[in-house]
Image (cartoon, rainbow, N blue to C red; front, side, top):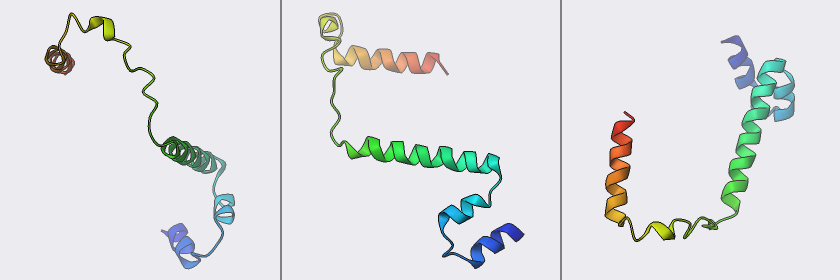
Length: 81
């Protein structure tokens, strides 16, 4: 509780200074989290997805309808439970 009170007593302290006070293991966790946030931001910055997979299963359209596929998906999901 002492650490939290220390942090709360100086909310204007720069982030870099706070990170320097952490143990090396916790600094690694901070780095991982920051990298995750950056990748998340980059993924949302691109906007509309490319749909490069569109039409990849076109040759199966004569074998399955969309309803058939929905039923198969439900069956696969319930078999996995």
